[in-house]
Length: 640
Image (cartoon, rainbow, N blue to C red):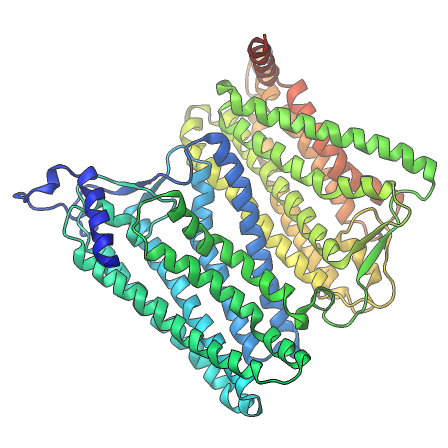
């Protein structure tokens, strides 16, 4: 009945797309994916067509993606580094984290790109590739969850022979079989997609390519394909869910036979995390693939649940509900009992702290107001919809984030007698300080290249700095900074601490943690310096060489007015570069931590620079001032 209803719904959708195809065809069909069709790309409708909602969704899914990367990479590192976790359960869990990383990377980057694009398209080849990898990831995860259920059954129901049953060789074989069976299923799905015939419709009512989303576009008979897909889904879904179900039946019966309440609670706690992960994954996955591909909100919600949310939640579920990897032990590798650090802040004089609170509250409010105003003006004024202002809007968003990472905590501590931060909060702050600062460095480098093309190659500017290329540069900036930040956090996680817990700073940064470590930090310092040199000079040198070419081009202009006009287009960016890179290099290339110069340079690049950037770009830019005036007049007319 379900399959019959599924086919009827698809036929109804096809008749809306292809009223001509409803009768018998006399002309040969155009095969979209067999080199017989002129269709070279599909249009994705995405999640929304409202630019304001898309902007909010971009921020939301970017945060989801970063947290997914950080959570799963941390899980893999902890399991790899801690010998106590070299057990079958955690062996499977490390592979589950890898699959979650993989699954998130298949869907989310393309979604983020489309949320910033007016035209959401995907090539036929890209669509086919996404279909294959989308099915490979969840398929492998389903088999892994089934293998983990068997592992829990063996551990709880047959604890005396657990080591013999779940040998390392068997665990490796189960993982290899999971990949093999998932790959076989993905290949079958891929062959179904390749053999679909398409007419002219090319709009996919989804945010990514999946086989059910392609069925409404096909003008050929899809009943066999639907039957094969349904059988594949049932085999993959129920074929993995039934072993899990019967394993938990045996597990529950065994737990209920335990006489003591403490024993029952301890036994159930070893499989509760896995049970939650199973419910999340199989619940959303089966609903997604057993309901007609309508493109409805519920349909999209289930897709987001299993492709975006589940990879984010899995590491949280296993870390929060598992005492073997509690936060303090995970953060400090089981070598320390420290749960929090004490920050010395900027001063211990209450009167000076009160003055500093007022000062930094004013700076923070100006930062918020200035950057939000910049975002609003660039968004609403069509005259500023150019590559330079696209990058500037991203810079303003970064400044908002960068300032919010450190200043709110600083303001709280200025009003508190006891300035403390938990270990988890310290590691989180280390990560976000580096990711925001790192992305800003890359973005300033990208903006220098933009100015170089505009001044040195003005005739080819629109071709070189296309909308798609600008989006790719911004995404690359976030991606490279995220990679760098993950390495920094891994250095912090692997530090060993003794009794010292006082950080001579107002915020958590890796150089401030080094003096507290009682282990050998020489390797960590070398890695940090190499990263700073690679990241810092790797972004500064393109800026430097861009401005060498820019200055050379400007000096070749004969008229003084022309030189002045050309230089005015990049003067604001040049000031922002000097402020950011100058204070950043001083902060991270200084050997000591907690000195007045050290604190001053940190405040400069984390609090003052985000406030100054919108002022620099608005006061020295006639286009921005004119746009602000137009927006202000528009809102005054609206309220009259």
